[in-house]
Length: 523
Image (cartoon, rainbow, N blue to C red; front, top):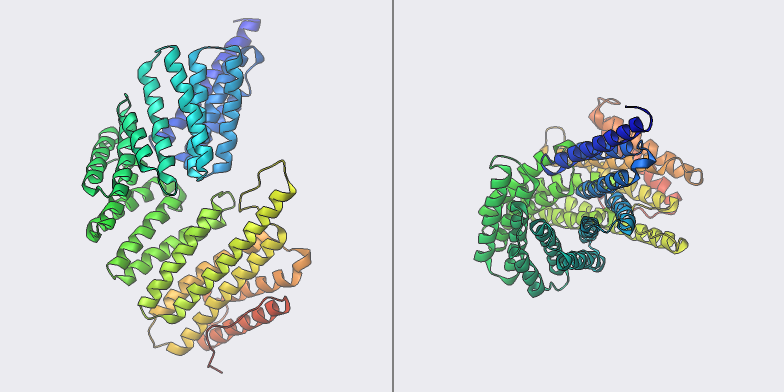
């Protein structure tokens, strides 16, 4: 091949290679549930496309739009909503431009497809009005295409089914839910031709409507049908996120009917699958925490408060780590989940007669609500200052707000450290260890959270005393509980309590109120 033909051939090879990389990403996400691998394949596809020469601009633009579209979906699966929106908007811009020079129907269908995905994203973000707007635009465009030509009618109906399904989800999520509209949309979807997975998803959504109506037997039948279809599609032994979603709904349905044993079984199967699916994240995912929460609620209903505490504590650890993750854009919903989690943990502690632990959870809850209010005010301030950008992410925290969060994490860690030392003195070395072990586990987690906040805060010149004081406290307590600093247990207790007193005095000098909720009767 010579000259321009060589360049053209190379560009064609590059586009084809980029398409293969994209398809590998789609396979990793949709079949294997390996979202990190999918993200890497899709980003590689974009890099390859950038090497194409301008003579293949249309082909490259088509490939680029498709890759951005799929990348937006993968980001959504990972909970990265801001990245998802950027990728999908890039895909929509390119596809709209392509329709200006190419009137083929498939170009319009591609636009409708991206509008649909933007609608799904807004559903996940709980922006129901925006979601309905995108989904309606997608549905209207698809219906207009159907009127123009019955091209690939089966595929077209399948696409419309997906949009009807998501619109129904919007009406279900409204307060109060518009059940009749949702049911009508889902029944319309079932009347169309669709793929097995789509039919299963629609049946699963219909089960939610039936459950809201109180038609439990009908809801159970719909879920069993959905499960059979998913198992036919993926195989009975294949752990898949969609199968886990059905098991979760089955658990919720059984719980509502007070069949706690059945609910426990469904939720446990859901948990097992989600831990496998999100194994690449070590199970640190909001969907894993959600099923742990439900298992905790089932145990509370059965008055198994020890089991409930275990499940809710595991949920708390995941939520704490998700909140710390700098890339996570679900801060608001995570704060709400953490507040609910602390409420149930406090209830379990009270039921077990552990008033000290119950009070500590109350303190944590108050601190968390204060942090939430500070973050909301910070976001509102930033949004007001920048009229050209929608700054609504709770992760955007001003330096002063970050310092306040550091203070609150320090107070929380100090409270647990102090309770731990006092419990050791009270129980003695020969006493019961359950309380001490529980407090030690909580202290280790609190110190991890405090370390994360120290890193995010950095050594702020305006708050050197606070930063250095908290850092000193963290270092002393970490070394002491690790046993590397002292072997004498009485000295360890004294060291912890002294560090707590020093931190309290420093915080009070900073103007922050610190009250010891546990009385210290030991000299």
